[in-house]
Length: 270
Image (cartoon, rainbow, N blue to C red; front, side):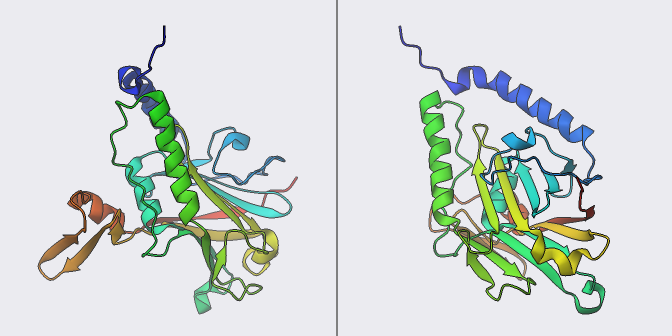
């Protein structure tokens, strides 16, 4: 006899347990990463946290993301995970900017910045995380996750850069000659994981002789969200959408507003 497993039947308990586990983990972690971490030898930039033991060094309350910064002898790594759909929607709308402050920042305002994903506003991915997946069969749910990742991978082909003196271009392909590698993907719980590898040779002006630097991680937000647009007009806010299912006003306001935090990191040695 064939049994069709419905996520909606048993998932509430599983989802509840997962949410509780994530909440407990977030409560145990510091708001900002406190120690340096030497990266594992098998790092693969694929939007998965397997080689990191599916754990993070901090949970930042301002941005509501888990994150880890690590390094080896060649690269600096940034791993970010959004477990809440609204946060993933915000990241997809406007991307994440990782800014590394140079020693001259206080005088010249210089930063090294890497932003990903970057989408053309006319060619944004058709990703809808507001869909209720509770009643989908396991097969349909797996297909839903597959379609999310396929659509995202198809449209997220560029990285925006500034402040790297060795690279003149400000917009480069993810398949670039500079070995700057970003990737992001949704897992089977609809959690969004972002990974970045940045060669350390580009950071020499920023890290100084002490191999330390300050950083800012920003969830940029966007006024364009899932096909709709939010406009701040005199006397209030206006939402325009070509479709009939524009996100809620609260969601639009939240997604359009950038959130960020700052921290410091010293390269780990092995």
